[in-house]
Image (tube, rainbow, N blue to C red; front, side, top):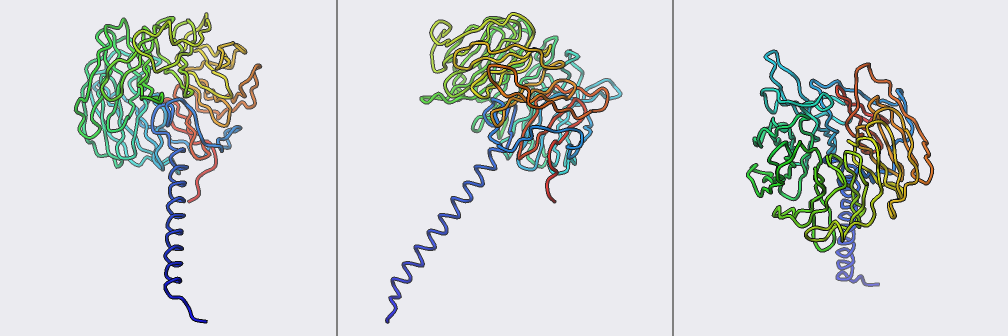
Length: 429
């Protein structure tokens, strides 16, 4: 029987195309899965403390510490993870009583310090004892990493530790220091510069550090510590920023103010969170917790608020988190509150444990709250408090945990003021 060579060639070409298509799909899937495990800035990929990792540890103890790395400088910035790199900031006093601001890159597999750089050296500014000089979390796009130190400036490095540019953004005065983290949007890095006095939010070119836009936020009676949040409302993107007087929506491309919603009390320290339809906002001082619909214009206090529920006591430094259809918050005294995210109804209020200043994170429908002693409560959200795990790692005396725990590829990274811990199985060689 004769062989149709042309048909065979066509079949071979079709098979080749199919294999290439399957390979491309496989690479895209691997890239997508890998990207979900990256934690490129404060509160993760979406800025909401949500993890797509379905393998985050729930129960652990001292025996589950894969490694612990003592840092050559103290701080409260959370880990920023990109593939095998973990970025952190720290600060230390010199013999001449100046402050060195540092940025570290650690190997996620071993905890070894790959590189560290002194970003700036200068006179120590006024700050609060609970804050310090290195509280803002780094941000990265996989090519560059940005670190903000308030009075110590904003600095950008490549992934190998080479400094690319630095900017002095002013003294940013205030009795409590600075802590707002940078946010990378497209080819810009956006920084909240609320301070005691004239305040602003600014966008800088990621390659050069030059100003793209700068928007004034008026005179503030004290500093500001909220990190911007980028959301997509369908017809446009909005840059959300909580503050002393309430929450603003800005155009991330131009800095133009789109809308403003007056808050129910001052000190908008916590960053809002988002469920693709509603923003959830908590003030730092006692005052209503509320949900609003973004996408408005002008003053939206009377037109866009979905619900608001009174919150009568305690100070909140940590940001809220969504899990299992609930909104969960905790104040500095360790009082946790669980709300129905749809209606704002309060399900429960309970004392969790210890002092809580780190922002919680969520994974697998569970909420993770780490207190200042390093103990992490894992809570199943619902109408009643359900603590399914209490995890303690027995840190050395004097260590304080005020940075948010970060999940990545089946591990959790916990940072104290002095060290970084990796919880979970040690990576294979």
